[in-house]
Image (tube, rainbow, N blue to C red; front, top):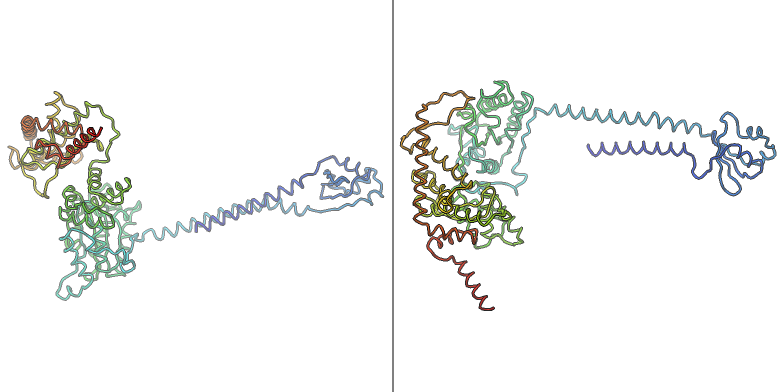
Length: 621
């Protein structure tokens, strides 16, 4: 339609341009003629120097014997021969003269009519036609405004892009729960004969990137049923009632194609608890939610229609959505553990030329807390990093570099710092590393660097050797002491502190507050002190001002104890602190193996190699 409109517009403009050019040519006459007074043409005729005369309306063009042309204007009411007679030219001379008369008055009138009247009418007509087309298009859109915008995917049409449970690594328990849904869709009589009802809805709950949408696609592919994919935000419009209309149309269309699977991503966009909105019960979001509740209650059981929904905010959902009869099942997707991370890395490593020395187990150990999407992005960043260096395969160093980039941001090697600042950063990070290494309940140090990344001037990476779901009191106290390692080292070596410890202090204070207020690990005992009430909600606190003072006192005492622990560690291991700081100033980055060698008082292997190489070169000289 756009191409057709452009062609029509260009055609009309071309016709208008031709008309204007033609009228200009007609009005200007032929080029190359000399315009003179009519008396001069008469004089040349009298002297018999004119061979031919062309009369067009009031314009006279005379051709002389030398081939030149003279153009003059005559009186339009009198003929050319009559004017010659009036000027005293003899009849014999007039008879011997070749006179050609062209009457172009009609053509001139038509040209003027086209240029002045018809051309504007055509332009105005085209504008009216264009506006009518837009109006028809708008009315057509208005008719489809309440139609569902869900995309329908047929698994049997594109089998090469089918996604099955085998393509989804990890999530063993979640896949087992959802495999029953596949059985319901493929063989419903197996369950109806024994009196079981097909679940109407399954709610997938989990952090972003854990594979909720991936699992929904796998369920549709495994069951080989139509898959209707939509998002909660597609039902929220400016006009009230549109979202509810789209919900009705979605369920109606899916029912026609049953057995089918409806997947609503980001359900919290329309499923938030009612009564908390500004518009009361009449705003668009709540009307849409009401329609979802009605549709899930309304369609009959065992008709092969199942609704899957995903959210990472289950706490804000309306309670009516989560009751039995609507979303009967709730499947929780956690962040992958170390074994699942290794499996996910193996899936995303397909098609990428990894070196044989790459250990996916080691990469999985370095990525606790990474989701499946994070791991996919990690390997993609590693491939980009290797390609940037014109490599043909991806090494383990490329992947480790990508881990640091994803966690902390890209390296800022161009950042210029003085030698004094470099030494301060080295001792700061060395303080963290020494405290973490010699504290029994701290995680082992994996990497120490003073290369700036993101907003950090350097960082110390310590990771657990195995996944854990619980954290003990001793581990909290060790984390607080490690957080004060940089602060303590700066004060010990340079006699004052810098602003580099601000983020450490912020994290330390947060840990101490959780330690006291939520986990009941302080002298206050097992008591939970909730967040301070906001002025908007008007909630009354469940604790007294004296309790808050006790909390503040406990937090300060815990932080002070962590500081004393950190000072004892650094004073006891001052030699290791200096040794590590000097190595950081020289080498900037130290990995786990080299760190252990430095702590044991050994020279790292790479340094021994470098020193032997230098000796060899000096001997050669």
